[in-house]
Image 1 (tube, rainbow, N blue to C red):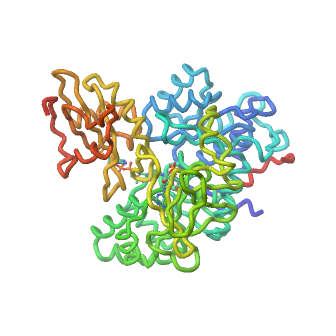
Image 2 (tube, rainbow, N blue to C red):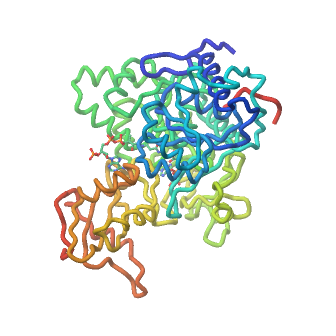
Image 3 (cartoon, rainbow, N blue to C red):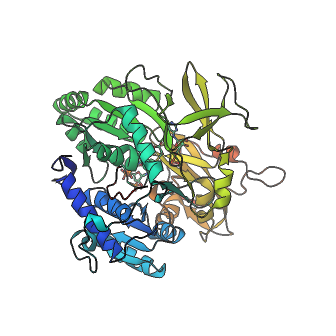
Length: 514
Ligand code: MLC
Ligand code: AMP
């Protein structure tokens, strides 16, 4: 097994698979606190990308609990929502987050545990449990809940079992030929599957090396490409756009070093949002890589992928990854002929178990055992091309899925606002940008900056409106329903202005195999 292989590089340190095994066992023992199994209790954890994240995630699994990743960028109300909705029994945070997390945990009736407590041996009763004392992890057990926004006002918890996660990772290892010789540079957040499964999970499953950046920083990424050590990279289109801008602004010697190093990588991938053709072409000019674009979703991870070997067709997302079945259907559920648009439905062992404690939503998400993605595609020449979504109230910004309904619900609680409508505006850098049109209360005024300052304390940064229109009356149809396309057309080129606007305007396994 070669436990001395490097598993993780983070914060200037290297950690072997042995280190990871020991630390996750320690974390499991601390979480178990003398009991023999956490029996799918939810453990929410807020740990920045790095060795501690991986150790805590695995420790939660090894203790028989369900891992609920929290987002480092989220303000307290978003963290509280996830902790309460998942009914977390334990909340884990690095010492820096204790001031925020401990009171939230206490109010929600959960125990707060710091990463120091979990990983540095102050484990209390049962803290020294060996691997034989860790519980059985049958594949059908719940393993993880990842919160995703959608057509409901508040985010839903997507529950995956160990079998789901195993199938998701196995598909990617096969499709993209991960090997122990890979060294992944990971700059994605770790509260979504792109970072958790496509990144960390795939690298660790084959005993490759995962090198973390604490946050996405284009110059650091170029510096690491320049080293020639990185074999694999995956990101959202916004990241590639920023990398291109940083390369273009760099001196020629740095450009050369970055490009030459990047050429030595074997695989560069893009996903979570549509890759603009211009970005694909420019990236190919700069690095020689035709980005491998793929399509996925939190509910089952990857669905379609351009080929690792062979032609990657710009604008297409390829064919089903191993183990995933895909069909395109019309509104009645009938399969559409090739060349006709249809909603993507998906089936296979990677598909999630349920939305956490939302049986109605879970039932509605499936048709005859097929998961209804809400994405529309067409099959042309043997490959799929995405056309859009069935729901208008879903916005993709910077690779994050956000719900217009959720933002509206929050914005409506602003004291100056009587009514609002949120839409996504096409945007070169972000894919879509969140924009709010509002009717104000009598005599109230509101600037974009004021709305943003207020919203930042309540919503994730990527849900905060980036444009504001104050109107006398929102566009409505005859029965009073707000017309979203008409709302979108209220916005023009000057929407970044921030001045005030007025109203008058199975088995006994203890080893994690994934
Ligand atoms: C941040 N900003 C935004 C924004 N997000 N502005 C508009 N729209 C957004 N969505 C603002 C910040 O508030 C800040 O403004 C300024 O941009 C610069 O911030 P930053 O810190 O440099 O940006 P950053 O937060 O780093 O965001 C860029 C990013 C990030 C691309 C790194 O969006 C990101 O990590 N995206 C990945 C999301 C992801 O993992 N999705 C996978 C979902 S799973 P100011 O005014 O404060 O300076 C999935 C399945 C699948 O979809 O298929 O993969
Ligand atoms: P999430 O719910 O955050 O997992 O986001 C999943 C959604 O991201 C999908 O339903 C798609 O709408 C979108 N998506 C993922 N990959 C792509 C892609 N390559 N092109 C366009 N949209 C994508």
